[in-house]
Length: 190
Image 1 (tube, rainbow, N blue to C red):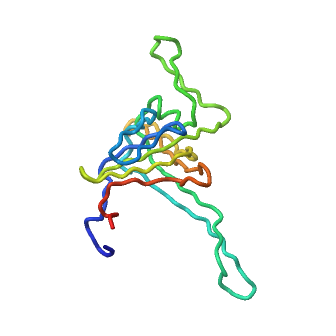
Image 2: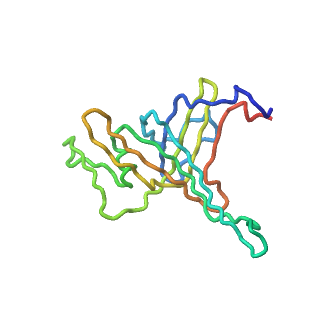
């Protein structure tokens, strides 16, 4: 029912961010487990996750009117912004644009990650899951995208290292959605 309803206010109390190779199976509902190819990126800052949708709308001006006659959609950006707190074999390549962390020599327990001189395409899938209490779960999936912006990394004595990223959705093709929300929230029942 439209109108003020406090039962429809959601708090993303706890959640997680996952990434997977393109084409990895997406869970069909909120009770199904994530397929084995999905990797949990671990802890994030208390700032959580910020979703941004920006549409660029160009006016069609006419000689006969001071206001636009119509609008033409020329661009859509859908981004997810967050800061990772863990440093590991998943988060470092995610932040720096792909590649892999490798052991320098077998059994050495010394690892190396090389940041390439020239950027390469690092497209992947992104999943976000959060729960409001024990009964309501939301899942948001971008089936194709990549990190398009990174925040500066600050190393200090008094704070944890943060890997701040902006992940931008890319179209899979003209028949698939840019992103999908799946939830078991009774607020959407008719």
